Length: 107
Length: 401
Image (tube, rainbow over all chains, first blue to last red; front, side, top):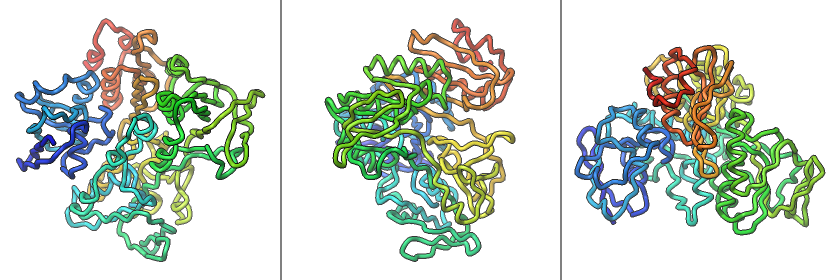
């Protein structure tokens, strides 16, 4: 099962097992990782599951759709080139080892 | 917190985030861990094998780790503001310093439907969705009463499951309480193209039965429709009985002020059950996740000492017949004209609602950029030349400059 690492804004890392088919957002919620709210439940409607993905990993993610791109502008913490909505990143075997950083606030 | 839906859950987690010491108790009627409601009428119904656990906001250990008392399957019988206590079924008394009512709303019943009739569904809880899901399928004849968000989302899910779907709406057009005629027209066409039989301007006058099961409905225009499954989606009523019995001010919802306080200063109300002043001249009750969670965070801030007023641009979304509808602001708010951007034929457009030169609402279909820009324009309250809105040669972002 792919392992994902969530690094909080304070630098604390949490590693979770995430089954393929879930999303990076869902894997955080179901493993009690703090720092992701995901208020709209994964519809790219709210920008409260904002994460930063390093350049190396970002190239391996599916391309951003227009709704995700637009909604990221509404993120509470600063939007950076590394920004993604974690609800729009499906977990696959290829993402084993993925590291995402969490912003200081989501709302 | 009384109520473990989006609002109650969000208050509990936001209060804990702001204060590690305060005692937090979340009381819910249902036995289920608190869960997401929007997917119940969409992906959850349509999925081949929905993962019910994925609906939970958080697993049990989240509540343990964050010391949030989660009292499920618990019914609040009474709120006693003078004693600062709530009384649970079974006799337990729970003292509080601050109480948040997040009791939500319940589906409206259709008076002509006999109680307990087989094949009849409503959609308010996960249990309702599980039951409905098992009743949909290839060739099932499904009649849905009400062409609001829920009715139309369920129509799409039922079509995806291969059912034969008819939607009966009393108003002359779909979603008439919430969207413009333009947007109604677009979705009417879309649903009809997806082979949904859409009948507007009629009501169900009688439910036909055989034994204890529904067999069809009789319409006010004399037609009758056969039905294996009858789904009632005619809106909701706020669960405001506890507040009323406690002597709080109630008018189709628990009335709160701009701080979301009820008529008792130690009791707040959030979400579907709360009627609040959106502006000084506009008292509203909104049924949405955004409203529940923004109000929840506001109350948590307030309990942590903030003295701000509640002021958020509402937004809503729906997915139907493969299209994404996003609404910013309230299309029902006073406005003097609407301006369209984009064309219905392209399957991508928005309707902007103006009051003078102020944007008050925007409906977007498959146009997320328009939606996000509109949210900002409504929030900032800056004057805008409505002519510029319809000019699609300039990107929508240009409206922000």
